[in-house]
Image (cartoon, rainbow, N blue to C red):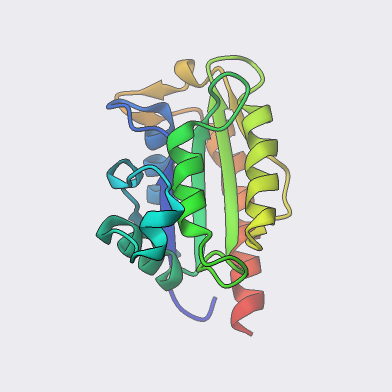
Length: 185
């Protein structure tokens, strides 16, 4: 690796004690020797409104866009609500995707991780996130999908503790790092 990789981590959940946040923080700590991770606060964003954007994006939106632009890649960890993407996460992606075809997401490598107390691990949200990021011209990392089933049994004291799950996710991080290195070359 040519230099430390800068990642922006986005948790798709606002809940205190969120499984998504626990997974994101645990994995970020695991890769700390290779990558620094900054964490986005998507709860501060207003509901997407094109009129607001045209009038000059709100400060929280400007901050998110700048943080995405400054990052080498994104790591998005999300739960699945009603077979889909949590509204707060979709809202953040909608804000970040502007201006269309020239947003800070364009060409940005994105690692997607989903989780659920169900055995399916948020696989439907995983697919929706891949489609949504592809529509923004971001680069979802081509790797085995990281879906964490029965996540509620794998989090202890706010940390992901299942070593097999961590190791599987770290392989996806290596794919993310390889994508970033290709873009740097």
